[in-house]
Structure formats: C-alpha cells, structure tokens
Length: 174
Image 1 (tube, one colour):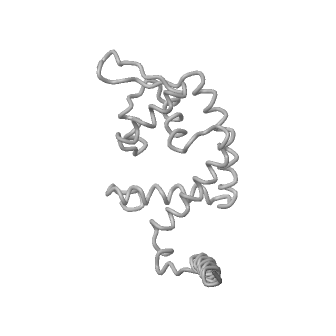
Image 2 (cartoon, helix red, strand yellow; image 1 turned 30 degrees about the vertical axis):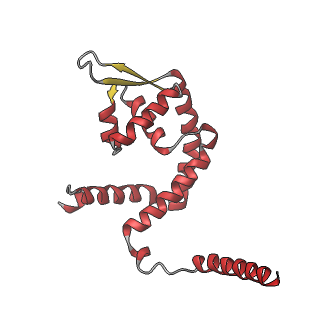
Image 3 (tube, rainbow, N blue to C red; image 1 turned 90 degrees about the vertical axis):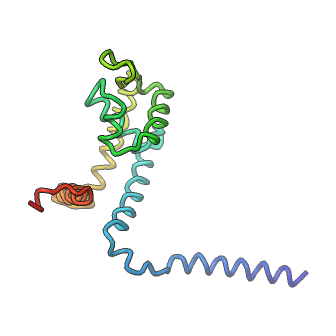
C-alpha cells in the first residue's frame, strides 16, 4: 500500500516538474521566425477579441462576414469567402450558422438562379452594432500598446508581408 502511495506522489511530482519544465522549454530559433511571431500574436489578439465580444457569441470570422455584408449588400457567398480568404468548405457552415441565428439571409439572384445574394437582417445589423462598440474598445487597447504610429506601421508591414507571401509585389518592392 505504501508503494502505491509513494508511486502516486512520485507521479504528481513528475507531473508538476513536467509543467514547470514546459514553462522553461527552449523554443530554439522559433521566436525569430516571422510566422511564429505572427501566430502567437494572432492567438493572443483573438483571445482578447473573444473576451471583448463574449456575450455576443461572435467569432472573428463571423464578425468579418457581417462587416463585409453590411458594406456590400447582395454580394455572392463566393465573393465574400474569396475576399476574406476563407475556404468554401469552411465558409458554408459559417454562413449556415449566421443564417440559423437570424443574422443573414440568402436570396436567389435574378441574374443567376444558382447563386445567392447575401444580406444582413435587422438582427444582424443590431448585433453588428453591438459588436463594433465592444471591438472598438479592444482595438483601442491594442493600438495604445503599439504607440501613436504603431498601428498604421504594423498594418502597412502586414500588408507588405501578405503581398510578398502571395507573390504579388508590394509598393516597397517595386
């Protein structure tokens, strides 16, 4: 019996030291990789986004779709997905969820009966307004952390990285 208790204590000690070791693990050169730094930043920013809109049950992709629909009423689903870089297989369930919540409607297009025009509903417009208020505070906090010129500089650098990664020349490369 004492052997079992001792084994459990050893396991708990090992588990504790394992988690301590995880906190001190070397990442090698990973912190010097742009993609790794972007991913860590994205995860942190998205977690903060989720906290900002927790009561609205809204994810960043859904928010983006609602913004695009408000700016482009009647746009096709394929156009939204392409503009936001969302694969069709991921976009359809996202859109289905927004429609099930009564935030978006799909109407057949007169010019192409196979395609659907997307529109925000009144509920979608209301939810988007509430989300924008919460997200404005989130964005303000992030911009403040970057300093006065930080946000425009960061956005310009990210646009340059995006263009380079996609193989399209950015203004700085011409």
